[in-house]
Length: 247
Image 1 (cartoon, one colour):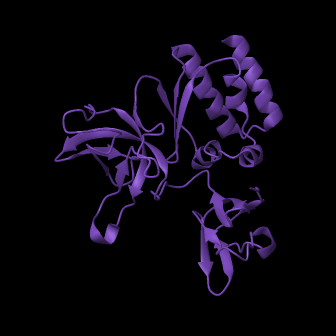
Image 2 (cartoon, rainbow, N blue to C red):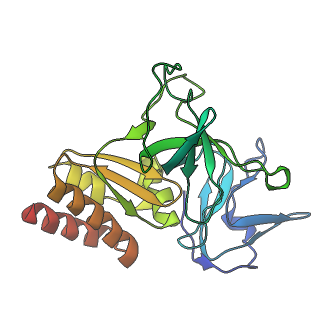
């Protein structure tokens, strides 16, 4: 994974910055488009990210609108229930999504969750919207590879914080190398002293629960400060020490 200089819409991505695994087709994600025969250009402002192992590239976009994509983990708010699904808001400006009542681990008509309006749920995009067919996105709280929840489901307690799309993507990086390249260490440092749970939504939301209101707020505010001010590793270290002393 690598972060390049910021690209502007229409900028051509230099070929030497793109992965070139001869055994895999290049996969491009948000913020990039392919112009035949071989040009890759930016469609939004952001930094180029590449995964050499997966032969993939995408833009790390802090601004702009979230566009639902299959398998994205997101945090949604329940706005009602109709038929056999909950109606969920992904963001204030995207289509409402349907979360089937039985899309929870071991759910039946009798045991499915009873979710009130305003409840938060950690889910994945099962199928994105098909605007031409007037079909809204569908969500699931079951990992198709295991049939288990794998951390998905209703989020009880805690607090919700708004973060940029770029920060959400960086927090969701899981491999050791990717986490090192993302240069986000604030959660690890706070987690060494405090116990808390987090859920990161690719749609730009962070849920935190430290079983203590003050610590929950402190963790959430620390992440938003890193995000908004673009704090580097050394600055995050100092921020973590400050937050821990105050907590």
